[in-house]
Image 1 (cartoon, helix red, strand yellow):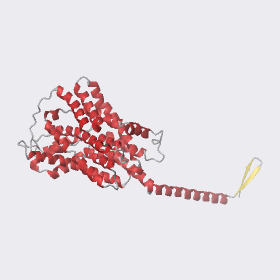
Image 2 (spheres, rainbow, N blue to C red; image 1 turned 90 degrees about the vertical axis):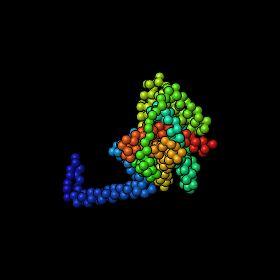
Image 3 (spheres, one colour; image 1 turned 120 degrees about the vertical axis):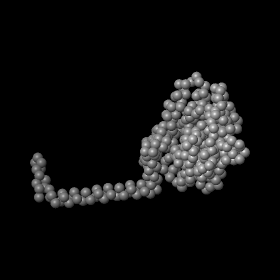
Image 4 (cartoon, helix red, strand yellow; image 1 turned 135 degrees about the vertical axis):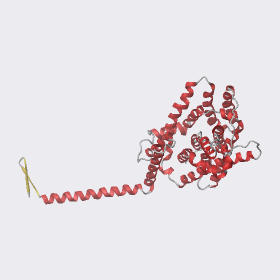
Length: 407
């Protein structure tokens, strides 16, 4: 027995009883803690908790690819970090006062401003000179969009999983143009915008891996050795200035819904080619492009919330998007081989593969494969011409889908 005096009052304490009470409290605390921990782990691996955990992993993978593999870091890094942000319980970036939700509603949902502003910057980067010196290569850009429409039709047949608007949104992944994929899926109201954006940009980044496989599948070593002499015709400055204006008018007449896409792309190019706005050109292709890419990456994460993202449909979108991308490449190559049946001067069929919109990665892939087949075979300028035509064709294809679905 322990006697303790405080002032005039004495208290008797039994040390054994004290130890027993402490032990019971400790056991009770441990039980409550273990139950809490068990329920937390159970919530993570079941239902919405499991989906949230999956999205954390997806975000971590995107960040890893951006930093370690340097795959589209300016976009995948903010997209990956945003995927983690929007999937934290009670995340403050969502809701009426949430910054990411506000950016999404204002910059993408309400006005589609971010993808369109990005097109201005892209247009300011592109030199259409190689294409204008060999205009027939513009047809390769058109041929390399065939996979889009094949996948749209196939996806539409999966009626239990996708609506016709979703089918068009999935098909546009084949354009290998992230901003176009985001804008089309958003304009059509697809519920899979987040998955489509991630898949589109991931496949764009994987061009050096995917395209060589597709190209070698439908070409022979002999065909890849075909040399193409590059003798560019001089392109007048007035032609370069008129080109973006004429393309905008023609696209607007053929596919009115494409005017915003094509118009912003061609406006950026007009700034570049006019010759009197050098500072604006520099701002558009550097500052504007970098800023919008940064904001677009973290903003699109709003549509990567676990409940909508983690689903069978997302896996299907990954497969269908890869097929669209793969078939676009093959379509461009087969078109070039078809042209060769009637042409005296043979075209290296790999040029057709550069007709997708992944600029300039696709042109570099063709150049690399050409050098592998023949160290003296330089195809870069021809491939670049087809590649920039793919930029135009992809946004027109996106506008065509919008016109077909919305009208």
